Length: 345
Ligand SMILES: [Zn+2]
Ligand SMILES: [Zn+2]
Image (tube, rainbow, N blue to C red):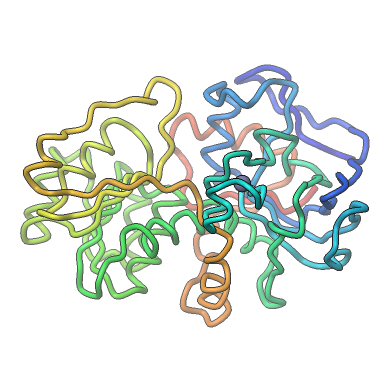
């Protein structure tokens, strides 16, 4: 099969012919229909992720058709159109038993702990627990983002942030996950303040329902959000993952507000200072989000099927497998507007 492989961190993604994968006993092989290119892939490629060692095939935001099943798989999956969460739960550890498969103690992540979906085929273990059937109307390019950025944004807003209608939600960072959060919060009836350093991303945020669009280059973001929202946001998301956006998110909250850390903190920013004195004085809540539990997929897919949420509007570009390397490299400059999806292999 054709696959995009990097042999050293920050090195080129080379298109190679690899052997077709075989399904693991409890898993399947999916013929990839589309796969998103995500900032987490960039982190893996940069060498920020301790699970990844070259040579490596990235890719974790996939949708496609099951073409082979392992001997222990109970479901009739061959021929089904599916996606998976980026974190495949084991079904047996305490978090999985509590329904929180996204924080499985023994998680398997395609594109990180194993070969990913920047390839014609990808093997996935634990199929019966983790495969999600796609509604017929949902195209692969739209479904690709559901397993990562869109569902992470959905969990950040709907599970952790829980804004009431009319509440202010500040979204710091308007890349793929941030723009998804803008849409999800706005469609839930919240008032959204979007923050970024890129005018085009802010314009997209406005199109997706943000009432305010603040350019972080114009000065201190946190007081600007507090002023513009009559005292601060009820919910604030760091949708980029950096010391600066984390601090801005926490600083933009009103008393008893909720900060949700969505963007990954990796590399030099694994441990960043947090204004705990403000957390105490304002009785703030801090939450981390690591994707979404499988049990929330039905509600998410219902909203997509009914047209209340439109993941397709977040796709900025369709590219070919050959373009994956250039797309990853471009993420070093924060240059992309909307999500990029590999749609031809
Ligand atoms: Zn992703
Ligand atoms: Zn588990």
